[in-house]
Length: 177
Ligand code: GNR
Ligand code: NI
Image 1 (cartoon, protein in one colour):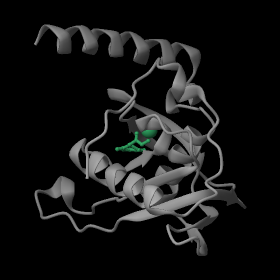
Image 2: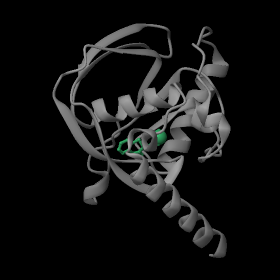
Image 3: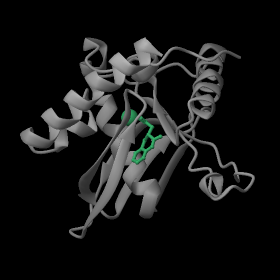
C-alpha cells in the first residue's frame, strides 16, 4: 500500500473529465487500497481518483463517525465506481465544505439534501441507494471531481476569489514554515 500525492488547485488535471472504469482487476484493487490509505492519512472523508492523478470514475468515502469527537473513529469504507446520481430532492442543504485539493479552505455550498445513487463496487456488482446527510453531500462533492468541478466553482465569484486568495496566503505560510 502507498500514500499517493494529492493534486492541488490550480493543477489542470483536476479539470479533466474522468473516464468509466471497465476492468475490475488487481490494478484497480491496489488503486482503491492506496486511495483509502491516502484519504485516512490526509485526513479526509472522501477522495476521487483524479485527486491522485488517475482520471477514472472511481471514488472512496468513509465518514469515520466520531473522528471529530475525540473517539475512536468508526470506519465504514465505501467504494463507488461509475456512479450515477438521480432524483435529487428539491430541498437544499447548506454545508461548509472543504477539499483536500483546496487545502485548509472552507465555504458553504448548496446542494440537494437527498439524492439517489447507482454505482458498482470493486467486484463489479451494482448497488442502488437513497442517501441523505453528510453522505449525500460528500458523494455529490466527489461526483463533481469526476466532471472536473471543484466546490469553489459553486461559490459566488466574490467568495471564490476570497478563497483562492486565502489559499495563496496559506501556501506562502506553508512554504515559509
Ligand atoms: O475531507 C473532505 N471533507 C468534506 C467536507 C465537506 C464536504 C465534502 C468533503 S470531501 C473532503 C475530501 C475531498 O476533497 N474529497 O474530494
Ligand atoms: Ni474534494
